Image 1 (cartoon, rainbow, N blue to C red):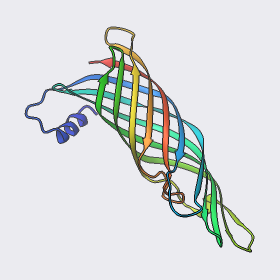
Image 2 (image 1 turned 180 degrees about the vertical axis):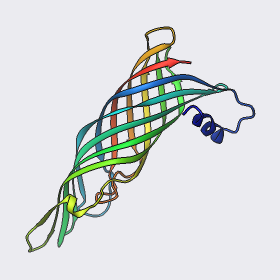
Image 3 (image 1 turned 90 degrees about the horizontal axis):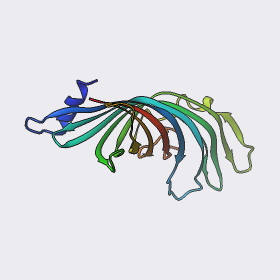
Image 4 (image 1 turned 60 degrees about the vertical axis):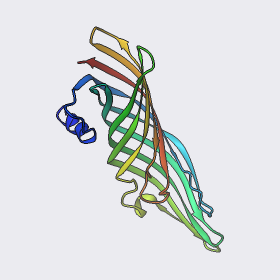
Length: 222
């Protein structure tokens, strides 16, 4: 992993003879609270109602410096979940779903904005890119036509897969470093994810996700 980071950095920052150094390596783990959201504004009877769901995250982080410029990277495995009720249609008919979604992803984070708000408090802003590794979904799909009875099916019988294979979003991190020894800190931290890409490849395709993380980091200075 140490060999990957310098190559990635130099590809984005073509600096002549930069001085590259790792400042900290961190083990990260904790809890996730997810909520899907939708800013759909079409001219229709569309609606989407979410319910929050739990998850967890575990991974590694690293802070680097190129001369005086600081960067942070993370590689994290995480799970998150949530329920949605969504529907669309018109006077002649429509359809709606009720679904319980659970996902596992591997996320790569790149944080170009890194500030020390005090000696102990770090603030980071960046982008997170996630690849879907597993999904589990259940629920019902119902369609209806005016004057006809509703037809309800298990959502698993309608779709072979439901989630988008790739997502990205903005991330904000606030961490408080507590020294354990001369080179090791324990770091309680809060992370907020604001999704910019669609979570699902099936209806409701415009739905995105917001996630809150309460994490603990074990950080070693190098």
